[in-house]
Length: 126
Length: 435
Image 1 (cartoon, rainbow over the protein chains, first blue to last red):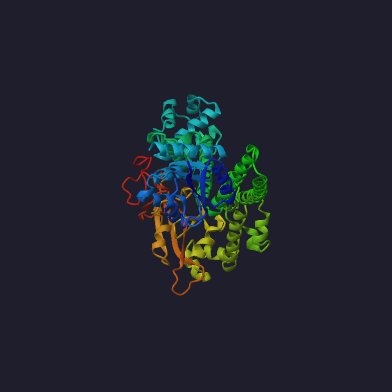
Image 2 (spheres, rainbow over the protein chains, first blue to last red; image 1 turned 90 degrees about the vertical axis):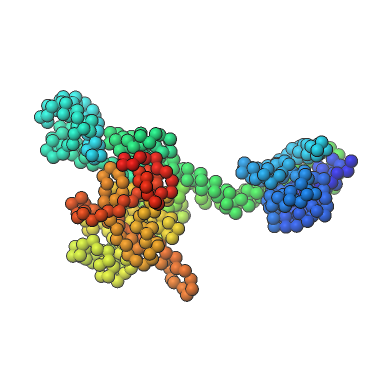
């Protein structure tokens, strides 16, 4: 099954590593590095999963997530949020905004893959 | 009664130190043992010849038995009690504790100050982590680069069938990221190093600067005589551990020098001996602003002024920029002072000198004459709001000089202020009315 993930992350070498890993898992990976038009990009690409960095140029991952949750089509879109800030306040805010999973940098490849697999499984059961 | 109660407790403390029984002390000063017991338990006032006799037998200076610990010490103990969740009834006995165990009380107050200082440092660093854009950006960069390296290295190590093209690409990324990591770590360490805490845990350069000024009793004879300049004096101050503290001291000393030049020491002495402590008269005599006159008075030797005066300066936000303490007028270590101080009243009436007699609650109910004024700092410009700073001189009033003038009750900070009905209260007090 060919699933589609959109990775919104401004760190090019993280993008490259995650793209490589997920492609090998059979995902079609699209990447976007700017927060400003991330919502429009999600609307245009309609991915099965969104991996979203918290600190992005233009617009924060939290704002993007809040906007997406306000759009009925993306109310249940699985969103894995990546952040360099592991503070409970950030996690709490992300959860309030409707994040599906929250992951703190620096994470391992296996953590990313496990999170993606879990989110797919959850979405499949929903 | 508070002073007396302290005296009794101190007599008991000193008698025990001297290894004397109550009966022996009573015999030597010619009173009954039961009477000395009443004194020691603060049920009888003591003064005059009896006090002198007891001091003589105990081989201490009489003032050691009568003078209370500084109001600031008691205030600090009360704050410590509040922080530790001690019951209000115990907190109200801070006076007694300071009186009976002055050494321990001092230790506790110092510990409390240190804790407060360290807490402030933690808060500052935490705040910096959250709000400082440079630090947030640096940490984000550091962690993102570490993530990229970790991920790339794991791919290289764990992927057996990696094509040469991908391998070369990841090797390049790894090389690039490791260089970035080295650079960003170095830059972050330099940034943090520049703001490291001092050995004594003073997180705030202003505190360090104040400690320096206080150690010199706010008076610098070398500057008065022109023996040294502010730059040299600051350079010599090895106790100033941060560039920021040195900068603050340099500004203070330069202002000191400028004030000393417009109001020279010899002429100040003459004027003070002729006119007494009259800030407005001084300002007129030397043709300076009242702020300058207040500042200059605060750094004059106590012998010339007649009393030890204090000074507080705040900006328009109410943040205290400088404080020179005077005994009996407790100044909170950090912010959150009493909004009823004339210092703050002056901010709402710029350029209007305010003279107000105030009383701070405490063991001595000491009275102070405060002279405050808020004046603009820096040059004024058309259509631009001036930036005001308020300065308040605190002059202790001897009991004999109170002349019946009403003293406005003011506090130290709400937490340790017992005035329940105060309209300026920000938060509940830990104390009951009339402690």
